[in-house]
Image 1 (cartoon, rainbow, N blue to C red):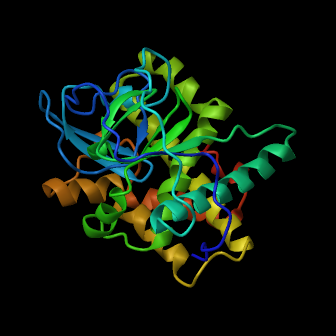
Image 2 (cartoon, rainbow, N blue to C red; image 1 turned 135 degrees about the vertical axis):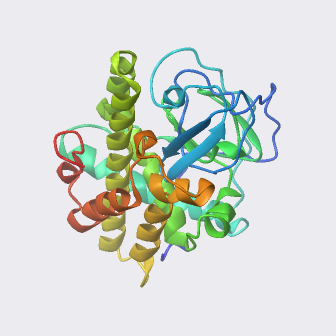
Length: 303
């Protein structure tokens, strides 16, 4: 991706090196918890394998917590705390620069899309943290993976995740990294358009199977929105050869079926709540090929 020398977003909070308060006790998020990227690491708790894949994938976590609590909504939240330091000057921290540029490009895209329908785009903030962080959705640590918190409209990421994305998930490349961010921004779009609040409103009346099916549609739509951003990046002449393939490979590597087979040797389809590898490839590709928000309606068509 041709990102060097481009403008960075001003909506970056650098909390790296700060210590989050409170005991982790696993993930620590309450109701209204964040929409997460997978890490595949266990975080302790009451046991029971839970398949949770958010923006990039599934988290398999041994906890007693209902995985649906991680999706968007209201409920009690823990306040964010800790002051932020200024992001290092451009050129002093390459990975932070990269995140800032990608987020700026998503801001450019979604500002245009919202302006086309006569609306302003409320830009989210991206929080860089180390090891653990207090968010509007509660306390989380690096094992949580990157996540979007609807309560404070922020994306949280420990940049060490990108090394894990390469080593453990088999998804190298800067455009795979960009896909992670664009997917989480996709959840922000869903929050603004009412998709996540609607899920929160309805989830108490859903069976576990219905809730899983709903969650799949949410995640696939975020993948499609990430594809729309990839299309925009192409129009801006930011793509290098092989970039699209990097993102599609990342989508493939974090499908429910692929991650479950990698972690336990078999897949359990009834637990899928973020989409199979084939579905994730398909919906990212749909957004990338069309660049059309209307093509990302995962709620009124078969997925």
